[in-house]
Length: 237
View 1 (cartoon, rainbow, N blue to C red):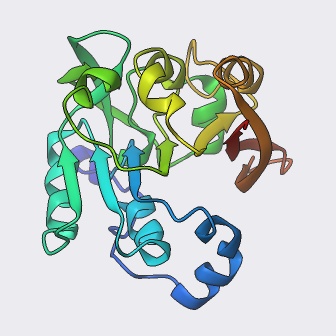
View 2 (cartoon, rainbow, N blue to C red; view 1 turned 180 degrees about the horizontal axis):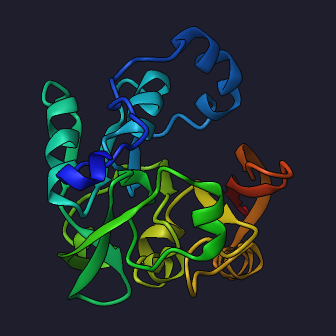
Protein backbone atom coordinates (compact mmCIF):
# COMPACT_ATOMS: atom_id res chain seq x y z
CA UNK A 1 0.00 0.00 0.00
CA UNK A 2 2.81 2.40 0.89
CA UNK A 3 4.48 1.79 -2.47
CA UNK A 4 1.46 3.40 -4.14
CA UNK A 5 2.59 6.64 -2.48
CA UNK A 6 6.27 6.17 -3.34
CA UNK A 7 7.46 4.67 -0.03
CA UNK A 8 9.39 1.48 0.78
CA UNK A 9 9.86 -0.17 4.16
CA UNK A 10 13.49 -1.13 4.89
CA UNK A 11 15.13 -2.48 8.02
CA UNK A 12 16.66 0.30 10.12
CA UNK A 13 20.44 0.09 10.54
CA UNK A 14 21.67 2.33 13.36
CA UNK A 15 24.67 4.49 12.45
CA UNK A 16 28.12 3.63 13.70
CA UNK A 17 28.91 5.40 16.95
CA UNK A 18 32.48 5.54 18.24
CA UNK A 19 33.24 3.65 21.42
CA UNK A 20 30.14 1.44 21.45
CA UNK A 21 32.01 -1.68 22.57
CA UNK A 22 33.80 -2.90 25.68
CA UNK A 23 37.36 -1.48 25.57
CA UNK A 24 38.56 -3.68 28.45
CA UNK A 25 37.33 -6.86 26.78
CA UNK A 26 38.87 -5.78 23.48
CA UNK A 27 42.24 -5.13 25.12
CA UNK A 28 42.16 -8.58 26.70
CA UNK A 29 41.12 -10.39 23.52
CA UNK A 30 43.80 -8.71 21.43
CA UNK A 31 46.58 -8.47 23.99
CA UNK A 32 48.75 -10.52 21.60
CA UNK A 33 48.41 -7.75 19.00
CA UNK A 34 49.67 -5.10 21.40
CA UNK A 35 53.01 -6.89 21.59
CA UNK A 36 53.82 -5.61 18.08
CA UNK A 37 53.93 -1.98 19.30
CA UNK A 38 52.78 -0.61 15.95
CA UNK A 39 53.83 2.96 15.21
CA UNK A 40 51.85 3.25 11.96
CA UNK A 41 48.51 1.72 10.96
CA UNK A 42 46.95 1.79 7.47
CA UNK A 43 43.19 1.25 7.42
CA UNK A 44 42.16 0.46 3.82
CA UNK A 45 38.39 0.43 3.43
CA UNK A 46 37.78 2.44 6.58
CA UNK A 47 34.03 3.09 6.12
CA UNK A 48 33.03 5.28 9.10
CA UNK A 49 36.05 4.20 11.14
CA UNK A 50 34.89 1.02 12.87
CA UNK A 51 38.31 -0.66 12.72
CA UNK A 52 40.25 2.53 13.46
CA UNK A 53 38.06 3.11 16.52
CA UNK A 54 38.95 -0.28 17.98
CA UNK A 55 42.61 -0.30 17.03
CA UNK A 56 43.04 3.13 18.60
CA UNK A 57 42.20 1.54 21.97
CA UNK A 58 45.21 -0.77 21.59
CA UNK A 59 47.56 1.81 20.09
CA UNK A 60 46.69 5.28 21.41
CA UNK A 61 49.93 6.87 20.14
CA UNK A 62 50.10 5.30 16.66
CA UNK A 63 49.62 7.27 13.45
CA UNK A 64 46.55 5.98 11.58
CA UNK A 65 46.07 6.48 7.83
CA UNK A 66 42.52 5.69 6.71
CA UNK A 67 41.17 5.31 3.16
CA UNK A 68 37.48 5.60 2.24
CA UNK A 69 36.28 6.23 -1.35
CA UNK A 70 32.62 7.24 -0.84
CA UNK A 71 32.33 11.02 -0.25
CA UNK A 72 29.32 10.85 2.10
CA UNK A 73 30.88 8.07 4.20
CA UNK A 74 34.22 9.88 4.16
CA UNK A 75 32.57 12.93 5.73
CA UNK A 76 31.30 10.76 8.59
CA UNK A 77 34.76 9.25 8.98
CA UNK A 78 36.35 12.68 9.30
CA UNK A 79 33.75 13.82 11.83
CA UNK A 80 34.26 10.69 13.92
CA UNK A 81 37.99 11.43 14.25
CA UNK A 82 37.99 15.21 14.12
CA UNK A 83 39.73 15.44 17.51
CA UNK A 84 42.29 12.72 16.82
CA UNK A 85 45.53 14.50 15.98
CA UNK A 86 47.24 11.30 14.82
CA UNK A 87 44.55 10.31 12.31
CA UNK A 88 44.81 11.17 8.61
CA UNK A 89 41.97 10.32 6.21
CA UNK A 90 42.11 10.00 2.41
CA UNK A 91 38.98 10.21 0.22
CA UNK A 92 40.35 7.61 -2.16
CA UNK A 93 39.83 4.10 -3.38
CA UNK A 94 42.97 2.01 -3.82
CA UNK A 95 43.79 -0.28 -6.73
CA UNK A 96 46.53 -1.26 -9.16
CA UNK A 97 46.38 1.88 -11.30
CA UNK A 98 45.49 5.56 -11.00
CA UNK A 99 42.06 6.12 -12.53
CA UNK A 100 38.44 7.11 -11.97
CA UNK A 101 36.12 4.13 -11.54
CA UNK A 102 32.42 3.54 -11.10
CA UNK A 103 31.64 2.35 -7.60
CA UNK A 104 28.47 0.63 -6.38
CA UNK A 105 27.22 2.74 -3.47
CA UNK A 106 25.03 0.50 -1.36
CA UNK A 107 22.28 1.53 1.05
CA UNK A 108 24.23 -0.56 3.59
CA UNK A 109 27.52 1.24 3.09
CA UNK A 110 29.88 -1.56 4.30
CA UNK A 111 28.67 -3.66 1.34
CA UNK A 112 29.59 -0.96 -1.20
CA UNK A 113 32.14 -2.13 -3.77
CA UNK A 114 33.70 -1.63 -7.16
CA UNK A 115 32.21 -5.04 -7.98
CA UNK A 116 28.58 -6.10 -8.46
CA UNK A 117 26.91 -8.21 -5.80
CA UNK A 118 26.83 -11.96 -6.40
CA UNK A 119 23.67 -13.95 -5.64
CA UNK A 120 25.28 -15.38 -2.50
CA UNK A 121 25.65 -11.86 -1.14
CA UNK A 122 22.01 -10.97 -1.80
CA UNK A 123 20.92 -14.23 -0.16
CA UNK A 124 22.86 -13.58 3.05
CA UNK A 125 22.79 -9.79 3.42
CA UNK A 126 19.20 -8.65 3.19
CA UNK A 127 20.17 -5.08 4.10
CA UNK A 128 22.57 -4.83 1.14
CA UNK A 129 20.62 -3.20 -1.69
CA UNK A 130 22.44 -1.67 -4.63
CA UNK A 131 21.23 1.87 -5.11
CA UNK A 132 23.47 3.77 -7.50
CA UNK A 133 26.86 4.05 -9.10
CA UNK A 134 29.20 6.90 -8.25
CA UNK A 135 32.56 7.86 -9.72
CA UNK A 136 35.44 7.62 -7.27
CA UNK A 137 39.12 8.41 -7.54
CA UNK A 138 41.44 5.41 -7.36
CA UNK A 139 45.11 5.67 -6.43
CA UNK A 140 48.01 3.26 -5.97
CA UNK A 141 49.01 2.66 -2.34
CA UNK A 142 52.71 2.82 -3.14
CA UNK A 143 52.23 6.19 -4.82
CA UNK A 144 50.37 7.61 -1.82
CA UNK A 145 53.20 6.65 0.51
CA UNK A 146 55.99 7.41 -1.92
CA UNK A 147 56.66 10.70 -0.11
CA UNK A 148 54.81 9.95 3.13
CA UNK A 149 57.11 8.71 5.90
CA UNK A 150 55.91 5.52 7.56
CA UNK A 151 57.28 4.86 11.01
CA UNK A 152 57.72 1.15 11.68
CA UNK A 153 56.45 -1.29 12.92
CA UNK A 154 53.50 -1.12 10.50
CA UNK A 155 50.05 -2.77 10.55
CA UNK A 156 47.99 -2.89 7.34
CA UNK A 157 44.26 -3.69 7.38
CA UNK A 158 42.46 -4.40 4.08
CA UNK A 159 38.67 -4.62 3.83
CA UNK A 160 37.64 -3.64 0.31
CA UNK A 161 34.78 -5.94 -0.68
CA UNK A 162 36.40 -7.99 -3.44
CA UNK A 163 39.07 -5.52 -4.59
CA UNK A 164 41.81 -6.97 -2.37
CA UNK A 165 44.00 -8.37 -5.15
CA UNK A 166 44.20 -5.02 -6.91
CA UNK A 167 44.99 -3.16 -3.68
CA UNK A 168 47.82 -5.60 -3.01
CA UNK A 169 49.26 -5.32 -6.53
CA UNK A 170 49.29 -1.54 -6.24
CA UNK A 171 50.86 -1.57 -2.78
CA UNK A 172 53.58 -4.21 -2.89
CA UNK A 173 56.37 -1.99 -1.60
CA UNK A 174 54.26 -0.57 1.22
CA UNK A 175 52.74 -3.90 2.23
CA UNK A 176 56.17 -5.55 2.39
CA UNK A 177 57.08 -3.11 5.17
CA UNK A 178 54.24 -4.38 7.37
CA UNK A 179 54.89 -6.69 10.28
CA UNK A 180 51.29 -7.91 10.20
CA UNK A 181 48.31 -7.69 7.86
CA UNK A 182 44.63 -8.10 8.67
CA UNK A 183 42.72 -8.83 5.46
CA UNK A 184 39.07 -9.72 4.92
CA UNK A 185 38.93 -13.15 3.24
CA UNK A 186 35.92 -14.62 1.46
CA UNK A 187 35.49 -18.38 1.14
CA UNK A 188 32.67 -18.03 -1.42
CA UNK A 189 32.19 -15.44 -4.14
CA UNK A 190 30.12 -12.61 -2.60
CA UNK A 191 31.05 -10.16 -5.35
CA UNK A 192 31.25 -11.05 -9.03
CA UNK A 193 34.83 -11.76 -10.02
CA UNK A 194 36.36 -11.28 -6.58
CA UNK A 195 39.42 -13.22 -5.36
CA UNK A 196 38.65 -15.81 -2.69
CA UNK A 197 40.84 -17.20 0.09
CA UNK A 198 43.23 -19.34 -1.95
CA UNK A 199 44.10 -16.49 -4.33
CA UNK A 200 44.84 -14.00 -1.55
CA UNK A 201 46.74 -16.64 0.40
CA UNK A 202 49.01 -17.08 -2.62
CA UNK A 203 49.56 -13.33 -3.03
CA UNK A 204 50.55 -12.83 0.60
CA UNK A 205 52.72 -15.94 0.58
CA UNK A 206 54.64 -14.60 -2.42
CA UNK A 207 55.16 -11.32 -0.54
CA UNK A 208 56.67 -13.17 2.43
CA UNK A 209 53.71 -13.46 4.80
CA UNK A 210 52.44 -16.56 6.61
CA UNK A 211 48.75 -17.14 7.27
CA UNK A 212 48.37 -17.27 11.05
CA UNK A 213 44.65 -17.73 11.68
CA UNK A 214 41.41 -15.75 11.46
CA UNK A 215 39.18 -13.60 13.63
CA UNK A 216 35.57 -12.34 13.40
CA UNK A 217 34.03 -14.99 11.17
CA UNK A 218 30.86 -14.13 9.27
CA UNK A 219 28.34 -16.95 8.73
CA UNK A 220 25.51 -17.63 6.29
CA UNK A 221 22.00 -16.88 7.47
CA UNK A 222 20.64 -20.27 6.40
CA UNK A 223 23.06 -23.11 7.21
CA UNK A 224 25.58 -21.16 9.34
CA UNK A 225 28.41 -21.86 6.90
CA UNK A 226 31.46 -19.59 7.16
CA UNK A 227 31.38 -16.97 4.41
CA UNK A 228 34.13 -14.59 5.46
CA UNK A 229 36.75 -14.04 8.12
CA UNK A 230 39.47 -11.50 8.84
CA UNK A 231 42.72 -13.30 8.09
CA UNK A 232 45.95 -12.64 9.99
CA UNK A 233 49.15 -12.67 7.95
CA UNK A 234 52.51 -12.30 9.70
CA UNK A 235 55.72 -11.39 7.91
CA UNK A 236 58.32 -14.12 7.86
CA UNK A 237 61.62 -13.21 9.50
